[in-house]
Length: 453
Ligand SMILES: Nc1nc2c(ncn2[C@@H]2O[C@H](COP(=O)(O)OP(=O)(O)OP(=O)(O)O)[C@@H](O)[C@H]2O)c(=O)[nH]1
Ligand SMILES: [Mg+2]
Image (tube, rainbow, N blue to C red; front, side):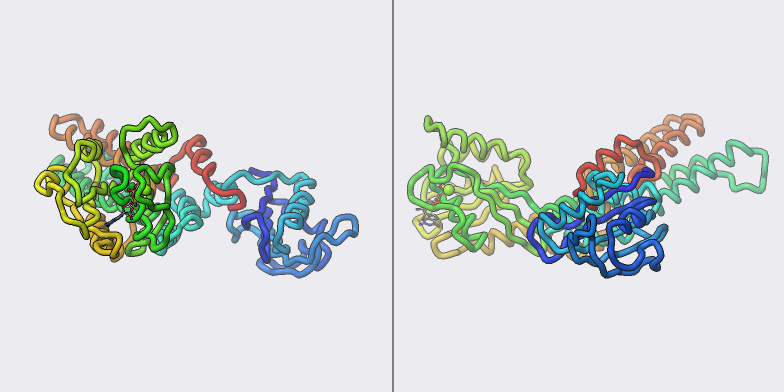
């Protein structure tokens, strides 16, 4: 970690400004060699300096260079940021010039990784940096900025402190049982504390389940037989004619995707090929694609034609999504209704009726989604919870450990064995914030970052 790294921090393309970031002990010295302007090694820290990037007297660009000296920097190392004119040629030329001088191209997320390894931010804050960059909705942004402010870190830290206190008092009792001035920790007290903590952790995990929806939205699949009006519903939800609609069964062959926001939560909608038995090669692939997406979807909207009786194909589709969160959309309600409503209740209680010709029922479809996913409640919540699978899985494992503690107490296990489980729980929670970590986990985590961050 002693080498100097550099990368383009802005996205590479045509734009007004590009930023090249350099971090490491020698970053200021190295950039100073190619900079015509004030001596960067002598200027004050946290200043912006006007000048030129030059190579053998040739002016490459007119730039502004920010100088940030350690330790009060993002990586806690010396950092230089060159604001040059945007565009591919200029930006690449300057980067290549820097890389010639014993500087290495930064790996994805390496600046943030250094910030973590140098103790400036914990793991949850590191993850929040990426979430913030990736957030597409106001809710996702809010969740990420709260985490970056340390809310998740505090949540876990406070919880761990309670565990630590319990572990210490158990240890004192084991080590110095003869002292009468220490508080005697009874099994009853441990039992009570663990029960309380387990409840608290369960609440955190439960609340955290919303984070997937806040961050990446609700993955919604529209499926059904051909010609029932799936593409028409997608178009009406999106408010644009994105998918082709015709009266020919089997119009949609490939997936058509679109996105809207409901209560600041993204609804990622996929319209699929109508499901039916077919010998047409292209359509067959489309049908297979439709079916393969069911498992990953957060919500499946099954569209039925209200003008027809429920067919065996409809039933087969409904059976496939039995375990999913489902809305049954009875479409074409402008036509005489022939569908057997009494048979639908066994498949889902969430039933709406639409008519895409007159835009009827689309609002009730949206409201149904808001109601099913509690979107109104999500928006008023405090947004302080765990925000990704890594964090939630660790918390779930910690929760299980507390269960083991309870079992140990019930089975009259010796106190030092109970303490081992409490310690394991403490360590698992430590992994969330990165107080305990393995190189492999860290490498995997930062690999998903973008270059330059
Ligand atoms: N009367 C009536 N016709 C509708 C309604 N919604 C769609 N249609 C018509 O039904 C036909 C099929 O609509 P699509 O939206 O293409 O149906 P689809 O389910 O996407 O069909 P495939 O892509 O073939 O699977 C078109 O002629 C639409 O105009 C509705 O609410 N009422
Ligand atoms: Mg279609």
